[in-house]
Amino acid sequence: MKSTKAIFTKQALDMFKNPMVMVMFIIFPVVALVMTQLVAKSNDDIPTNMFVTMMGAIFAGMGLITTAAGYIAEDIETRSLRFLIIAGVKPHQYLLGTGGFLLLAGTVTSIFFALIGDFTVIETFKFLAVMIASTAASIILGTAIGMFSKNQQAATSLGMPAAMIIGFVPMIAAFSEPVEKVASILYTQQLNVIVNDFSTNLWKPFIVITSNIVVFTVLFLLAYKKKGLKG
Image 1 (cartoon, rainbow, N blue to C red):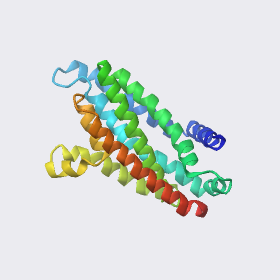
Image 2 (cartoon, rainbow, N blue to C red):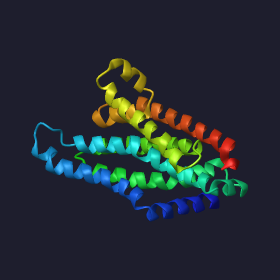
Image 3 (cartoon, rainbow, N blue to C red):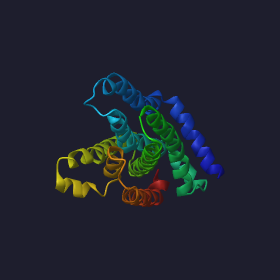
């Protein structure tokens, strides 16, 4: 517990020292707010929540992958991870400490999105549930990518294409049935399904998102055990 708390605090301090990372948690809901007020609400042909759900999906599905990967890669590059492992920090402690603060920050951002949107109580619940779950999936995917990277530059090189692919495939799926079938196994596709149609049952999307989280967690654990002491 102490190890997790120490890593959590370290990541919190690191983020506050990095304005570019902090901006990412602010800029997406700000853009959604501006576009909703200036465009959506003044145009009857545009759904009121279009920009909220669009920017929310981009944030939860893509925005945090490279950030999480960068945090892990930084620890590898500075050999902090090696020292943590030698000190007895377990994989789950490191994952909870590193990803925990990002998830907390992502949850706060998701709440801002919900406040901007014109949702019913049930829609707000569904929106927050799928946003937080998808944020967790992105963070864990990012940590796995970071563990497979030698340094921050490599993490960016791996994380950016992964974020683009996993984020844009659901957009392509909207125009292609074969792609839609393939994309159905991705958490980003299920995120888009829910935020674009709140009447959808949550069971299937959450089974898919949870499955993604399990796979990403396994990848992280394998990489931690294989590469940790080399970091």
